[in-house]
Image (tube, rainbow over all chains, first blue to last red; front, side, top):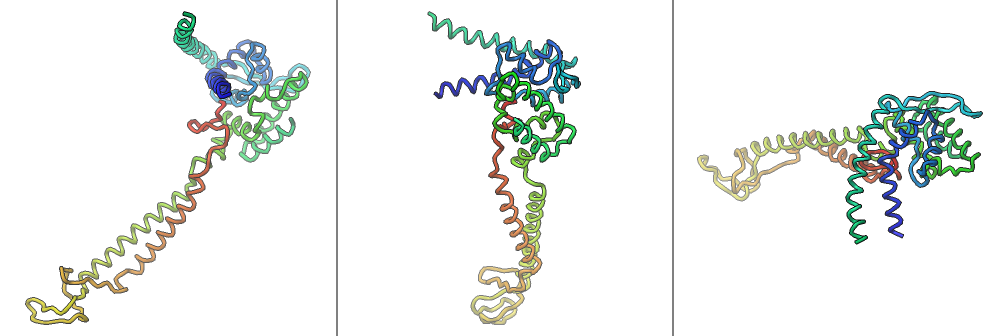
Length: 120
Length: 197
C-alpha cells in the first residue's frame, strides 16, 4: 500500500515539473481552450485525474506572457477563452524540451545501469 | 457542478477578484464542465484534484493569474499583522524607557540618601549616628545600606514599566494565534503556491 502511495506521489512530482511544458506543447498544435487541452493531453495518454488542475497553470502561463489569449465562439457552444503560444512561449518550450531531454537521458542512464544489473 | 462554480465565485468575491475576471473564469469553467459532462467525462478529469476543494482551487487560480497578490488565507497564515509588530515595538520601547527612568531615580537616591546599619562614627566629623538616623553620606559603601523610599521609584518610570509589560503581554497574546496558524491544505509551504502547481 505504501508503495502505491509513493508511486502516486512520484508521478505527481514528475508531472509538476513538466505539465506546463506539456500545455505549451499541445498549444503548439493550435489555439485551444482549457478543456480542449485536457482532451489533447488525454488523447496522448496523459490524464490529470488525481493530479492538479490545468487552470491555475494556464493562468500562470498567461501572467508570464508565455501564451496569448483571445475569446472566440466554440463549435456551437458559448464563447471560450483560447490560448496560443506567444513568441516568448515558443522560446520557453524549446528551452524546456532541451532541459527535459537532458534530464531524462541522464536519469535513463542511471536507471539503465540498475536494469542491466537486474538482467545479469 | 454548478455548486462547485458557485463555491469558486464566493471565494473569488471574498478574495476581492474583480468581477469581470471572476465572471470570465466562471464562464470558462462552466462551459468546460458542461462539455465534459456531455461527453461523459468526470469533473475530476477536468479539474484534477482541485475538484475536491473549490476554495483552494479558486484561490490558486486567481493567484496564478495575478489578480490577487496572494491568497489572504495564505498571507494570514504566514504574516503577522503590522499593528501587532508595532504594539510589540512600542511596548519594548516603553520598558526600555521605564528602565532608564527608574535607573536614573535610583542613582539620584543612592547619592542623596543612605541608611546606616548600626551606630557608626563618621570619619572626620566625629559624629555618632544611630540605626534610625539617615544622613546624606555620598555613594553607598560597604556597611552602609542603601535606602530607597517609595519616592525613589519615579512614578513615570513605574507607569512606563507597567504599560510596557502589559503591551508585551498583549503582543504575545496576539502573536500566538498567528504562530499556530497552518497553511491551508494543498499549499506548498516553501513557495506559497498550491502544491499541485
